[in-house]
Length: 149
Length: 149
Image 1 (tube, one colour):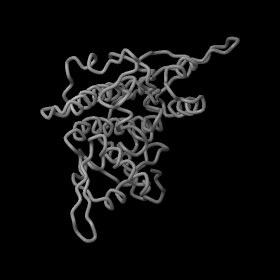
Image 2 (spheres, rainbow over the protein chains, first blue to last red):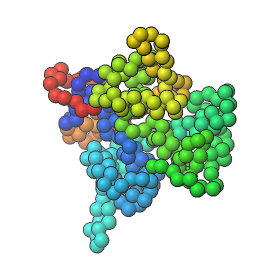
Image 3 (cartoon, each protein chain N blue to C red):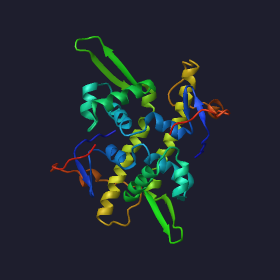
Image 4 (cartoon, rainbow over the protein chains, first blue to last red):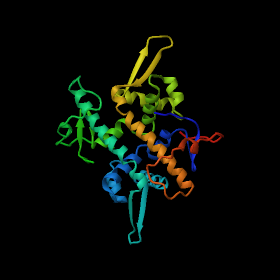
């Protein structure tokens, strides 16, 4: 992995290293979740995004979509209707981030396997392994607990 | 990409989908940067981490290391010396996240290419492309500007 931490500029954006640039554009608490939801659902209206991303406030969703739009990752299409209809979707650039979102999803699956192995004191668990029946192991029918965002 | 958004539990951790689980464990503003720094540098002392991660406060670094330690991604080794020496490194589980950190670094590189293409109105730029001479294109010798964290 090449690592460079000098001050850099590309276009109008200043950054130190490519990892930090990526974090500026797609990092933080909400932007990855917005991208993941759009990757899952294609073209989505504001209200559906709001309902689909657990815990996000209207303010944070507006700000995330504004930044992702300005940075070229999200399309915003406005239909001149009453009431106005606004749809969001990933641009080609936004779609180029989908493999990383998928890798994070897969990593979450292996992390769930780790949690189950840790609970059961299964010392032979190796990092990165995903139990074949992971969905059965983690599924909760009696969903009485609350899940934080 | 399979998507499940039911309430789930693995070990003592509650979550909705594997992507959200991954975001809980490695998401946010600082944890990816701490993991990236440890991936780059191997075994690192607290002070070196603090200096290496631009913009992080002592409080945020302590909190990030505490969470990453509790969640099994970071080792903390204390040497009984005066003054005490504490070293941090990635566990095997933490190392399983390195491919995603590398993919984010590479994505940042392609994003820098996009920024340069956008500035130059190079309409033929395709998402995901990295200019071969990207380091020359973005390098700034006169590093007088400030770079945000």
